Image (cartoon, rainbow, N blue to C red; front, side, top):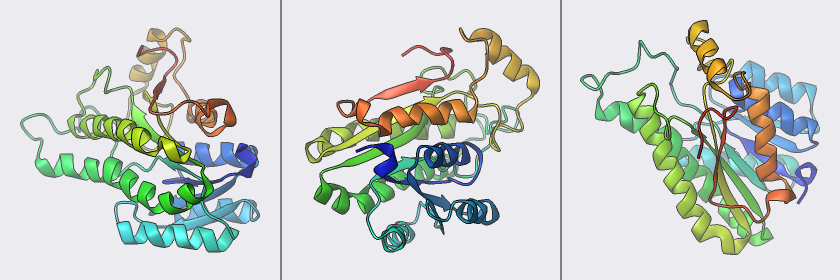
Length: 253
């Protein structure tokens, strides 16, 4: 199925990386369900600007009932089911090395909050999507990860542990759902310049990252969003259970 024929849910799709993903999908001709929690103005602006392509809907993706309502509302709005899901939403997190909980301060609550935002949210959207994806014999699920799993240069314990769990969930889901024509993959980025989550990062850190990459640049949200299109397009129909790192070549593997 071409991207232009798909209805794609982007969780957290109205700000930061999510907004770049939504805008890229719109440019590709897809219909986009822009999920948001608190970014109502930005989400509704997209829906107003692209009324034929965008449906904005508020839902807490860690809440199973709200996610089921989101899928039902999108189905009713477009007259057909969501075909693809990009699990992008980031729950209460900023990339600020000075403010992160150190090992002595880390709590089970820190870990649980990030686990809920990454793994439980992906479970909720995957389960809500499954009946229609199975019925149509097609589905694309793309989970957003981090290269910190491979290279924890800043020890964000809670965030990185949750994304590592999401990578494992991506691979087990891909194994079980492949027979139904549902591909599940992950794209993992480094620090992006810039998003709401990275606005607290000093310029010196961005300069250091740029100097360390083969491309000598820091990846932008738009560049990262473009790579997601590969996993949604027919060109990757034989690709599932994979983790593609999109960070300018900083981290290998």
